[in-house]
Every structure is written in C-alpha cells, then in structure tokens.
Length: 88
Image (cartoon, rainbow, N blue to C red):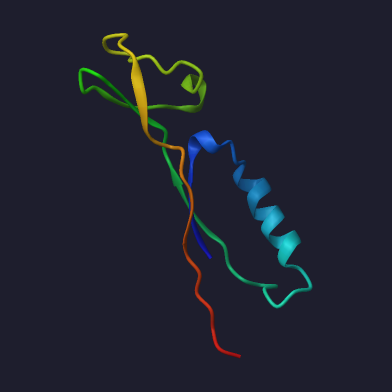
C-alpha cells in the first residue's frame, strides 16, 4: 500500500508503521508492505512567498518574510495512492 501523508496530519511515522503491522497481523495482509511518502508542510502568503515549515513552526502560520496572512498549500494530505494486489 502506498500512502501520501502531510506533516500537518500529526501522524508519527513509527506509530503508523507499528499500527500497520498490528492490524495486518494474522490476516491475509500479514507481511504486506506499507510505503509512506511524507509531504512537507508548505504555506503561501498573498504576496506569493512560499515557505516550507519545520516542526517548530507549525503553530505560526504567518509569512516569515512579510508577516502577511497565509494559506496552507501542502501538508494536509492523507491519501491512499495505490494498493497492489496479487492474485492468489
């Protein structure tokens, strides 16, 4: 299974991997691989300045260059990209 998960979704990578192993154990999916594409949090202000946020700045969404209001343009994703199934 391939997922895209944004940084603002507050998913802890090690917890997600543990949970995957736990919920697939003793099922036909046991041993199935989980691949996660982690997406950075990105904001953009009305002046067009784009900023990639680090974990220490998730609570401050103002533009660091001009202090203008911003909108989140990446980092809120939680998507199943694809699921590969083999015939038994």
